[in-house]
Image 1 (tube, rainbow, N blue to C red):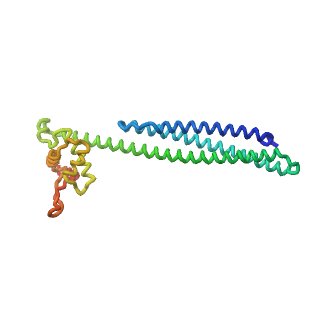
Image 2: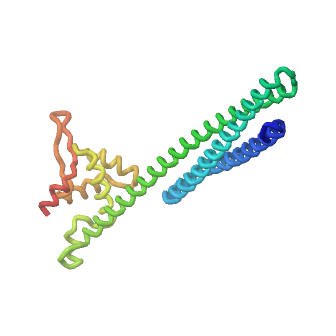
Length: 263
């Protein structure tokens, strides 16, 4: 019979030692992951957040691969335990008449070791599933951060285009400054923000509602200045009356798509 059967007690000791080493490595890796999760994410730079998500994603991928390798290794060891138990059962059947107490003791030890290895394998599999779920969450968070970054870049480009368009004209610069309804870059930014706000409110909004939104960005904004700016841009914003009697209300709407054809 092969070497696996000749020294089962020695094999058990070696396998238990290997399982302990694998478990220690696994615990060290989990502690490393927890230390990374305790690090605070910077709120000042969205680009740094994206890099952090990529680092966490890479770490989790490595841990998931390590857990998979450990899972495979434990499966192989379980197969070896099962083979050892099966061989001892066969030998026990052959030597049953001899009443050898060592065979019975060896079989019990292998069965106990097999049960312990199976329990550890279940824990590793559960941890592997948990890490996969964390990896998916990291990917979702990374995607959200990238979308936020794209939206900010789009708003920045929109404001730049509005500012540039206010300076383009075939007339001299002095005449352009005197005739342009937008007097400064700040007003150009306000026009872009208000246009975006009214674009998602197709039925219009009151000047108070618009200014309450703007006050979240800058509490120094004056309602009368905003209304004056919108009144000068007749091809971008228009005011309509809605309701009847006591519910009569003035609402501003974005009309830039129609006004583009008229300018």
